[in-house]
Length: 343
Image (cartoon, rainbow, N blue to C red; front, side, top):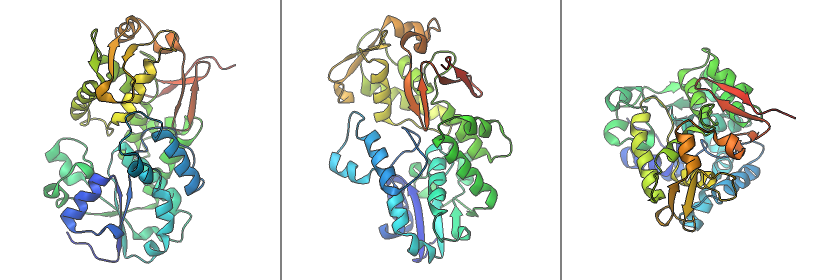
């Protein structure tokens, strides 16, 4: 596979970008790389590049275990600004390649990119979306471009155009996760009219919501289950979750973010809660220096004898939806259902 000089490539993550440069010799100035992970944190309808960057920086910079702050800060939320700045070059490019597969983070980035590009004069006929199906069978999981070496990258294709239906579906899921109500998300998950990648991504996003069985989101429940009756370092808990993810990836196009997991673990162990589910030992600034121990309340939730929301209430935001104790939404394994009593 060869790519010309008058082309653009949209990629999620530095790892994927590095693999593409090494494998195909694509130059940096022909790539637009998003280092954000839209599968995590509050989201809002796109208004402007400046507003977007400010909101995403506010989320990520407040999470614990921050890496090199200067470099990390520069990369946060800048993708929309880069996309808008390059729109003239992209409008004159022969092709715009979208290296975005079926992972939740990639589907959401495609939705954001199309939302921004709708405001430009770029012809959608120039877009080509990667097809990772040739490597799905040998790998046995839903692949991510960032997880593929040259051996597999050279097998992908053929590329496909973005027809009106696919563009509309990607815009719809973006509108669904940024909407202040979950009705659109529920509709996508229930409709057979949407492409599988969009419908499955919607279901994966619903797992962010607290479960009807425990009052915890899928990843929080998984993290809680890795805690024990004796102190355990958070870094070992996160590593254990990543180990489980290898099996989960066969059915779910979603991968946890380690800093977000640490953040959520600290939330369910907040000493200000009526019944913290874990007890935090250490300053809570670094995973390797923080330990947690399961509490009686945590054991009760894991055993199905207690509900986390009944114990501690809820004040949270998932995408564009605000959850409160009085008015929240729960995932029942198939869809979202109303919880709490409004008013």
